[in-house]
Image (tube, rainbow, N blue to C red; front, side):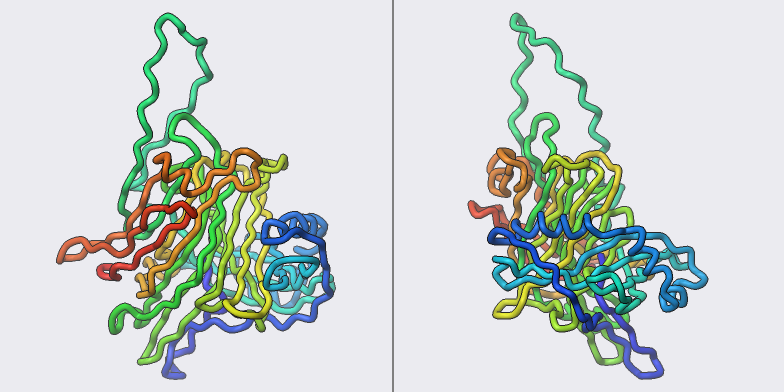
Length: 425
């Protein structure tokens, strides 16, 4: 996961903090497309915009920048992704979709094992480099490997039915409940018997405001909450996770605290990348987020193409902004949808973020929304016991302490992430 526009002032300035501010100042040439009402109608025009980009030329433009060369000098860089920054009317209706910028992301690993992203932003006509920024990256980790269940054996082909000695009926579906130190929320399936693929995970929530949980908790230490839907084919996500979401964070130094709110995307085990938002559209607490990730086989495309779409809509007035990304990854098809609140992993600092304090918030959960006849709502999965509920708990010398707990998923396919405490995080 990624914290957008983090910067830390030096000790010489007698303050160290992280803050989020505008990255870009962009003069755009609009590219508009007709769409139906709602974010669902943005998917096809954004896909067409992305597909029309000459990616080789775009990458070459980014690499040819003297500023890019300066910022990557001495590092072994690797191409990460290309993303589109877009804006639309608040209601996401009509012909208001506008391409604002194209972002090329390269990553490199630091000596301490952490990642940095070098993000080159080009104008929408791909004729001018607007900005080159090196930013801190961290990881939306799977649950710890020691707690992950063993792999599911490969399924055998169907056997001829034995009418004289039929097999016993399958056992009733049994829901799961587990506790991890860095996750809370739900993992949902589309059945409990056999394999039934989950091609898409979509969720909506309001970005929570965060604060320091106790005095000095965030002193020279990240206190972060990341919220995301994701897809994986393996319980806990240790194989891969295609995911995107929001981050709310606090970082303090010498009596002052900085607060940062951002959007990000990631295809674990790769590191995260920022969803770049224009300066007049900062990500803020109270914004409504809609995040959707899907495998293109859902709509008849390649199973190696994974699409990421996230939108940020302010609570009152203004314009909606967001990012769209297509990543090519050859992984097994996903079988689980994940809807998670997490303490992210700062790999360069060798620690998980502490859990900040915040008000409990709700998430929605829908799977396979674009797959006709195969849509599974969160309530359907919950009602049929096709789920594992995950609580966050951490331990210290005084015992183990609950941190976050998910409520039941209601008929509107909404559940609450209940904040309990930040103890032992």
